[in-house]
Image (cartoon, rainbow, N blue to C red; front, side, top):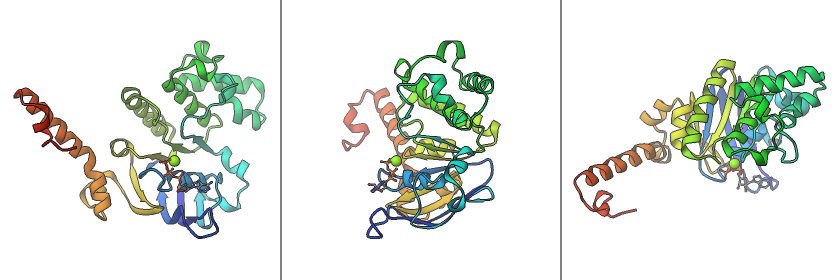
Length: 269
Ligand SMILES: Nc1ncnc2c1ncn2[C@@H]1O[C@H](COP(=O)(O)OP(=O)(O)OP(=O)(O)O)[C@@H](O)[C@H]1O
Ligand SMILES: [Mg+2]
């Protein structure tokens, strides 16, 4: 379980707050999606969970540990992190990238080698083909698979994912999201994933936490947020996928009737 209690972060001594008074709880084995626009504080919130950023105030617990009182290196052994924009080490091979944390933990060589193969199989990259490639020799989707494998290397029970599918085309994105969700469920990972994509949040989350300007507006199951939005912002956000689907449907109907494109959208953008 991950618990945030009244967590705030100011980078300028308290003049402005990037994250303000955020409280939320992610039950064991569940996936919470942090959803909000650019700059609203998603990455900052995520990084406070594994002490990449120290909160200005508030408390965070991961399992039975008080994060602020746990040694950061020790803490991160149990927490996988997938960085925004993939973030593999370009000068290292796929195998070396995956081995970073096990090496820090001084695992014996055979155990590390076996773990690399096991993880490459898990993310559907045949080890004999991919082990010795560099990140630049992989597609974006393949790099993201290696990013997952690296985050899973030390067998964490908690995963933090910052826009893990952000750099991918829609088809790769859908496929990889499905695969990640299966892995997350199978391994029983407690996970927090950041996205600004409402459809992605609705499709993948057990719980969605909507943020705006550093504040948490609402936390709930996807159907709660759609059925009972806390305010106009959440209502408008949750309505986006349906609004887009309606417009596409109108376009398709207009096309079938041979109407010009502008009339299907009402001529508006
Ligand atoms: N190290 C830092 N020093 C100063 N300000 C920072 C720092 N990190 C983030 N901020 C500010 O905090 C705010 C929230 O940033 P954050 O990276 O958490 O946003 P985000 O929701 O992840 O946005 P995006 O979707 O664009 O990645 C922004 O205004 C940003 O400029
Ligand atoms: Mg971010």
